Length: 289
Image (cartoon, rainbow, N blue to C red; front, top):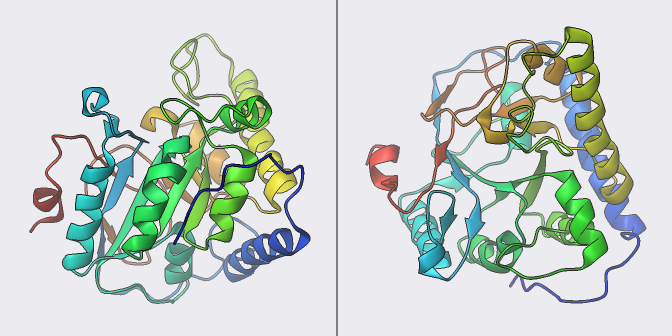
């Protein structure tokens, strides 16, 4: 059973964990070639429905529930419903393998948790293990840096540290996504989008510096880099799309609601649709049953 251990933070992950994480990333890159998208696409197939659920903060206090906060009980209800109705959780790495000719389970679903809240490890991970699921955690690396230094573990607001992320990776049930280094804001610019008063050159410089800084930190602390980019607030601009792909990402997550239909068509893992899980959200209706 996954139990979070409260301890003094270690300065380094074990060599074995780092090598294992690095090997996993190398295997993904070997499967897809060097240009981001696959060099040779696998044969098309009948469409596979892929619902993607988007969660954020999880707290026991129902008074705090809202658009981006749900209770552990509500999350457990979702996982039980998904398990009882035959769904199997998949990760972006498995979607990438599918694009190259691999197989997906009969009823795949992807569970995504944005912003890297500590509440994911405290409340969600034990449930994910209980119901035999996997999850994608999108972290804002500036928050990870901050809470790694502060060692503030108040579940009401704290974010995951690098040590926490190492533990989650070692569980084998979590894949990480880049949610920017420090562009998770609507002040000045909305997320990673271009400002109206910004030149194309200045925007490109700002975007590359921020996103690649996060990638370097993943490599430094965890020995691996995410292949998935999650757009802060789901906001993106046309100029941004080719730049995110140029940085080596093979999958991106949007906030556009809907069910994805995967046929191994080129580029279909970019801007995957998701549905935000608020207390009012009807999971059964969204899934079509």
